[in-house]
Structures are given as C-alpha cells and as structure tokens.
Length: 201
Image (cartoon, rainbow, N blue to C red; front, side):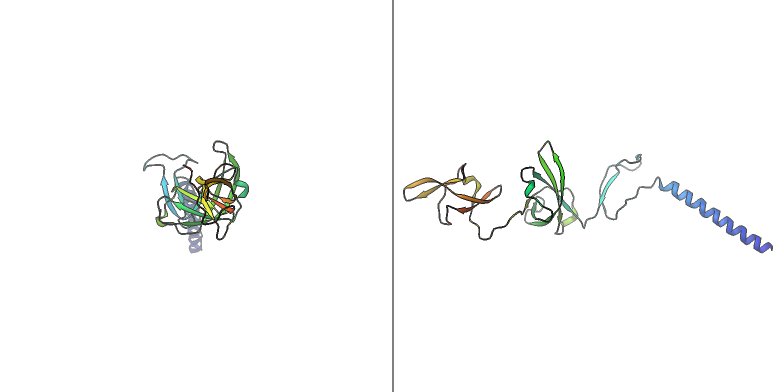
C-alpha cells in the first residue's frame, strides 16, 4: 500500500513537473527568434545584444532554391503580359550568361510614380552563389517570329519609314513593321536583306 502511494505520488510529481516545463518552455519561446521556413539568412537588421520588439523586422531569410525576378513593366505594355510566358534575363553580376524564367504573377496595382506594373517571374536556372537583390534586365517573350528581318530601331523614322540607298541615291520609303524591342524592329514588308539603309544618329 505504501509502495502504491509512493508510485502514485511520483507519477503526480512527474506530471506536475512536465506541466511546469511546458509553461516555462512557452514563456522562453516568446524570447526566441525563429524562422517559419528553412533556408538561408540573407540579411540581419540587429546586432548582438540589441532589443527586438514584437513584430519588428529582425532578419530576412529565404530559400536559395527558389529565386524569382521582380520586374517592372510599363502600364502600356501590361495587356500583352500573361502568366506562363517565357522570360529571358541578363543579370549584371553574370554578364556572360543568359537566364530563363517564367511569368508567375502579375500585380493588379499600378505604381503611380512610374506608371508601371510589378510582374514576378520564377527563375528556371540555378543562380550562382545564391545572391539576392541583383540588378537585371529582362525580356518577356510575347510573340516569336522565325527568320525575321530586323533593323536597328534608330534607323526607323516617324511614320514607319527609312532612308535607303538606291540607283538614284538616297530616298525615303515606307515599311511595314512587326515585333518591336528597345533596340530592334522587325520589318515585314518594304525591305529585303540586301537593302542598304541609313542609320539615323
């Protein structure tokens, strides 16, 4: 009978101690910084010994296996951008490489300062060294044309015309254009691959 009482008391003490441990653990957890995701710490905003208030940003952590490109698209072009389109990007830190991505999200809010829309693209290629926040330039592929005849955009005059050299000297002719980028223009009619055109300065 005495043995059973001692055994019950030990079990009760153990249960109380376990409850006290859980309470102490929950209390101490309020002072422990932990991330909700596994990954890498990219930046910390506090030094050792500094006080961190609740909801205050202490660090930025993320996965090095899932980078995305944060792009800015002019509002005049956003109607041609769709989720799933391919993206070709050049990152300044790696000038000899071309990276591929895919449009994953188009934000519906316009940035009124730049009159632009934010577009995110999931990076398909591995990013060397896992750096975050790198500067880049990207092209979203909205249409493709095989065996296209292109000219420098600087050669195109207002009204879709160019200056060519013919038998009678230089003359101005009108051309039909297709896909246009920042530096080149596709010509769908009015020129041949052997036509000499003047580049406007």
